Length: 148
Image 1 (cartoon, rainbow, N blue to C red):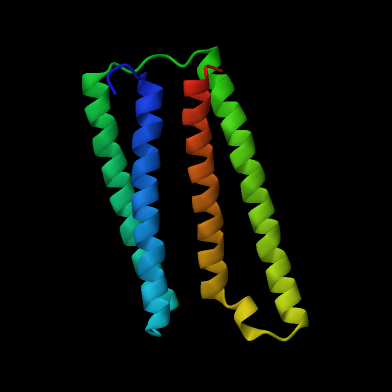
Image 2 (spheres, rainbow, N blue to C red; image 1 turned 120 degrees about the vertical axis):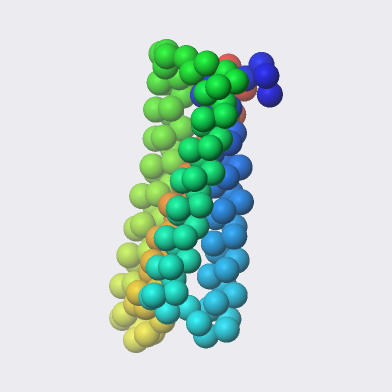
């Protein structure tokens, strides 16, 4: 990993931490739902706690790589990669949010009470943000390796 730029190291660490903590969140939310314990307060507590953990892990990781690899100024290549990966991640986020809106509307028309559940909507939105973030970070790394 020593031949990677600061931005690549940052993307790798962010991808790994987001992936692991995201999987931990969704696994815990699923288990709570299966046990009938997924309520707004418990969902908020789980999300807030794991968000704080993610922030702490990312701050510690970025401090470590800043000490070992001096952060460079962002150049045109970095901006181009960030713009391209962010654009694709943003498109995925948009499609996901529109899909959730349709799920709510169609579920409402069919009289499905689960489709409008605030907990389901919140977790569906978090899943869309998680997927879009993972795709964006993965594409960022792919574009760095591809040589964009």
